[in-house]
Image (tube, rainbow, N blue to C red; front, side, top):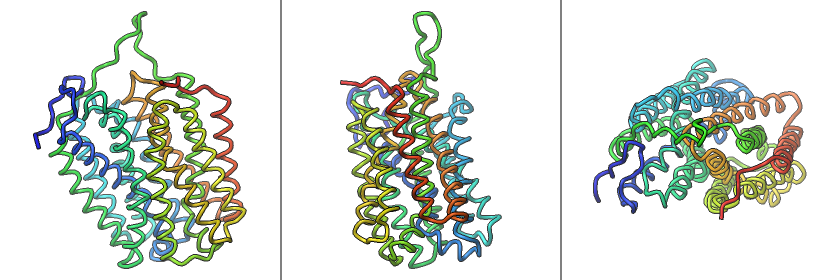
Length: 403
């Protein structure tokens, strides 16, 4: 296997074909997004024991996702503006070290204060890595493989549900929730080294070519605005409900901890299928694909609200939920890149900022509704938000369909 392929000043690979080493670099980047999202989402799988161990309510423990999401929401869109000419490879490696520190602090937290500090640190690492991942992925491979590289990089998000959260839940059940976060800290350090070894030097991307009238290509377009609004509503709906999926399955469906871990694995497996299916579909029909995902998410949450006490129906709803939400990250990313093709790094950071802000808002709203009105009201509220997202997508413009 050859060394990392050289890139031009704009960051594009100089070879027409993608080498094995370049695909290895994409794989390391994908593993990094996997660990980032697992670090963010692991409290979902260990929410009850973590709350008990810190002597706080499950609603308060769920707010830890809100803190992480808020910090990442500010970090992701800021990173492309602040990096200047810094090597993106070095930035990604440092961000993974920051993530490792955050997970280590979570593992040793003795109360709510240090837990929240640790989640702030995780938010900084998460925002930087996720905000750069898709834009960097396109620079690691030959131009003809760019879309596939983005799908693989973003697949780490879906794979976090397939392996990360369920495996973390199993580790938490067997060895305690602190051990699960300790494992994530070690994995983040290993990947920091892997990024330095596998990725080539990645300078600042070249500025977009000016339009015929001399102005730079704009970032804000109607399609970008509609896409960001749709994503904000959908992700808020998803995390309002999904943050509390373990209490839902415990209280309404009556599942044991082991059964819940298995069901989360099913959710993740369907999510991984949804990621690659949506990536392939959105390349040509981004708007239609994302609208289909919105319908799937709303339907799944509504099914849990209506038939959540029936074990078989709950399994079906969780599978549909995983399939639909698993494709949302890559589907939304392709929507954004097609809506602002000349400002990919900037629009990606903005997209991830909105995405993570919606995670924070969803976790906060979910905790508030659970504490004040109960789980059933939470599920119906989340389903209504998903349908609102569908309405926005149906009435507003999307990116032009590609043949």
